Amino acid sequence: MNYVISAASGYDCAALTPFLASAQRHLKSFKMILLIQKQDFTVLKPLLSRFPFVSFEYIERGDLRQMIACWLKYVLFRRSKTYQQKDRHGLSLETRQEIEVGMNPCLTRFFFIEKLLQNLDLQPDSRIMLADSRDIIFQGDAFGLLSEPFVTGYEPVTVGKKDQWIGRVYGEEGQKALHRRQVICAGFSIGGAAEVRRYVGVLCDELWARLFKILFHRGPDQAVHIRLFHDGRLPARICHNHEGLIATISMEGTNNLEIDRAGGVVKVYGKIPVVLHQYDRFADIAQFVQELYP
Image 1 (cartoon, rainbow, N blue to C red):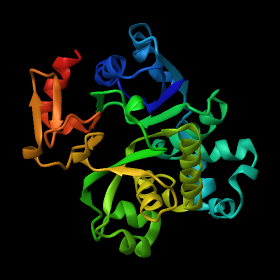
Image 2: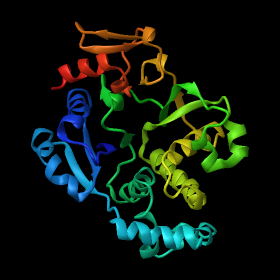
Image 3: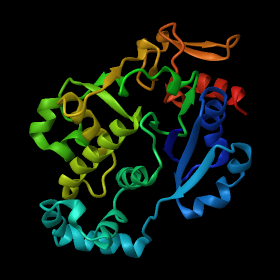
Image 4: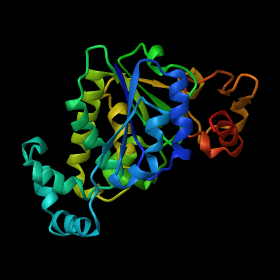
């Protein structure tokens, strides 16, 4: 069995319908796990009857009191620096949860996914997809076309000289090392069970090692994703938009995009990408997708 794991908290059914309906049309032999918060259940419950392959997992988020307590303990008192010097797996579950509950949700989800992957009954041939939800549609069976152990995708843009989301995580040295390197998108990755488990574990280790700097910031997961692959610490096939597998198009030139209404697809560089990501940045494409999956 293959799995799709996707964060879906804060969205309504309409926002998630293109993602789920296109998965239903194109993906084979899979289950989808949507990561939500308990308050999302009432809004998203109708999805369970329309899309029987979907199940929910709850990510606990702290209330304001817990968030403030986390900030005081692990930032103001700098206890997180002490914890960073320890093996995070050697800390008590209570301590780890206390820290994780105060993180930005972009970070919390990866630590939760790490635990989830440990508990899933995965077979050696199982494939795992980690994907954004609101801004992705499928135009083919990504599981069926996967021939490499791990695949992720480039964005058609490079890291800027003063991109703060890189600097917060890696400082001036990291900013220089990644300057002009092509951005690798953390919003979609797919691979074998062992490779995805390794990826998530290394990503969480890297986030933990810089926890004191990034606890409440958005974007550190993207910065770490980029550096891990550019440094060669994790092997992967990294696809360009023109290859026809993963197309992350928010920064793509409009002359490279085409709506094929007769075929019911969006083409990028004249090809039909299996995964179309960030389509919602273009009003005409977003409208087309809504018409395809009302």
